[in-house]
Amino acid sequence: MRVEAEFTTEPFRGEGEPPEHATAALAAAREAGLECDFGPLGTSMRGERDAVLATLAEVVAAGLDHGADQITFQVRVEGHSAPRRTASGLDALLAEVAEILGGDLAALDRQGKQRAVRLLEERGAFDYRKSAEIVAAALGVTRFTVYNYLNRERE
Image (cartoon, rainbow, N blue to C red; front, top):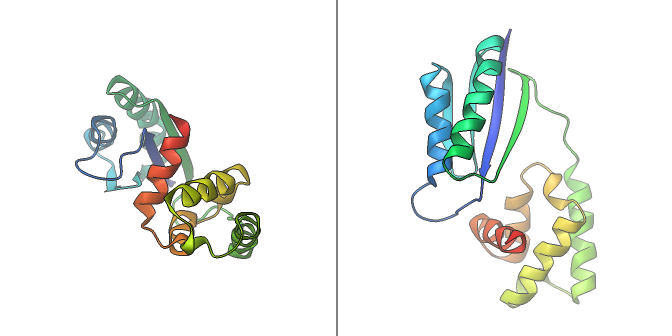
């Protein structure tokens, strides 16, 4: 059986070179001979079940050894997607936050947009598939800006 594991190492940095913890985790997956895709928001590795599961510990160790303070995983049988919350729920959260903040989210100043992201995170908005892109469009910013706002809240 083949499986796919997606993982994200944090802290996230939206601009410039990828952080060392992300590249070290990727290297651990590649050294195990797994198929890997590396992107600005996370990494995926695919292969036979036992090889992927055995590599998870190596990926975690490499990330932590190189500065990660959190590593999030999702593992599934290859070809199957995890059930996701519907986009209509995210639309409802965006409307709720817009009402709280007094109107159009894109018209908010930077501080207002940061507050909107905080309120959306508190309400679970980022549990939805492609939520960063949808929130970014509603705010009139890039998804990297949304991630930067999220990271500021954690610091």
